[in-house]
Length: 288
Image 1 (cartoon, rainbow, N blue to C red):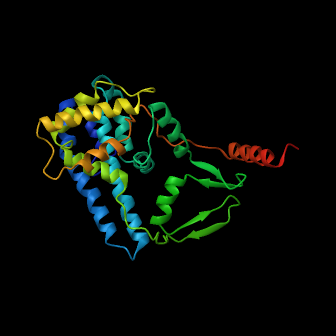
Image 2 (image 1 turned 90 degrees about the vertical axis):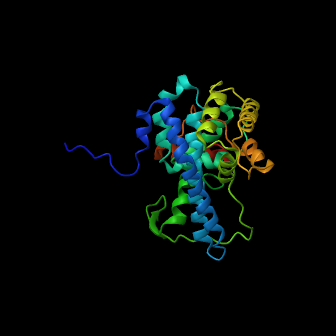
């Protein structure tokens, strides 16, 4: 069997082969690149007010690029004794559209602890689910569908197998463009100096004091964020553009660490969906 050449892009797994100190140094090289990429997509999207579909596509790219930074920051936030066993999983998320979109979504929500976060993530992972008043429609994962349907003209099918064309059209919302929360928090990280090597070392040492497994809380995260910010300031790492808005974005939009939260897609069989449809139907109309 011919061995596949590990050359070109999609080589983030090579980070697993680096020593811990080299990993942080390598991440410090890449995070500003990711930040610039996300901000470039976002800036371009705001220039396309008369092209809503293209604007949303670019805004979506900005969100996914920014989510990559949050995934890498979870490597830095993971306690040193645990990170080796989780590194490959986290780096796989770097390339997963669903993983990145889940990270982006979670920047818009609040959770009291990791257990609540884990519960909220589960529906986002399901490959198919039911929609309609009585669950009469079987539909694909909504997070991925919204991404793909805006990007591509394609052939899709409903439950009965009838093929139809998807036209990637987005209608104007009528609201002004608003920077996505995931982009806000990554921009705040850059302004506060977290993406420097010293900032990543500080992040690793501060957040590494506590492993977020189940009952660790938002309050725990806020305390660690404050400790990190105090250290960043003490070391003179925030840049001149840093403001209170950046600090607020870190508190409001940096999700709890997700290195102990599963994000892999959950397959759902047709039999399971049909059984759930029957349950919802008889719950609505009464038992036969």
